[in-house]
Image (cartoon, rainbow, N blue to C red; front, side, top):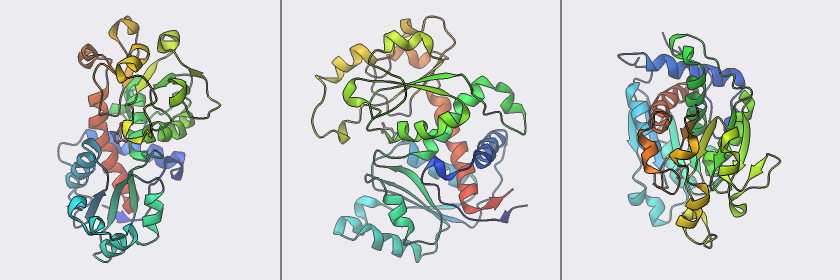
Length: 310
Ligand code: NCD
C-alpha cells in the first residue's frame, strides 16, 4: 500500500543522499521485473514543460509517469504563452494554480529549475538545465554500469552500487555537457575513477586526470562514456570540423580489441564522430540498455519526488 511521505525536488544529484540513491535504483530494478506496473501514481497529474528539444528524455519521463498510472499533460512550449513574452515565473505560477503533483522541466538556462521552484508548491524534476545538470541521466548511467558489474542486482531486492576501482573515461565536449557534469558529481560517490578525454577546448577546469588522446588511455579504462559535441552551445567554431575531431576521439571497434569494456552514450549520437557504426551491434555497447533503464529510473524518481512510500 502506498502512503505519502515528504515531497522532494530533484535538481542535481547532490540533492540525493546515498541511501536515497540506493532506494531509487533498487526500485528501478524491482520495477524491471513487473509484468504489470503498480499504479502508484493513479490520480496524479504530472506536467512536462520542455523548453528545449528532446527525444529520449521527454518520452522517457512521459512513459515512466504513464506506466505508473499518472495523467501526463505536456506543455506545448512552441504554442505556450512563453512564446508571447510571458516570463517563466508567470508560466510556473499559472501551471501551479492548476495543482499538478509534479512538474518536469528542461530549459536552456542553467538554474531555471530552482527559479521555477520558487513559484510552485509541487516537486520540480530537472530534465536538463543548460550545460549544468541532468540528474536522471546520471542516475540511469550509474544503474547501467552497476547492473553490468553486479549482475546479481537483477535477482536481488537490494542493489550493489560499489564500483570501487572501476575506471571510466568521459570523452568529448565535457565542458558544455550537463550529462558529464551530473556524472562528475555522481559517479565518484560510488568509487569510480574518472579520466576526462577531450581536446583542450572541451575540457573544464578540473583536478581529475585528463588526456587529449583516446588511443593513449583506452587500454587502462573499463567504461567509455562518449558525449555529443554540443554545437548549439558553442559561440564560435572551436575545431576544424567534426571529422577532424573524430580522427582523435571517435571510438572504433579495433580500439576495444576483445576487451571487457562497456560503451555508454546519452544520445543523440553523431554516427562515426562519437562512435563508429559497427559498434552499435556490439554487445559491449549499452546505449539501448541506458534508454530502457531511463524509463525505470524515472519511474522510481517520480515516486521518490512525490513522496510515495512503497
Ligand atoms: C542529452 C541532453 O539533452 O542533455 N541527451 C539526453 O538527454 N539523453 C545529451 C545531448 O544533447 O547531447
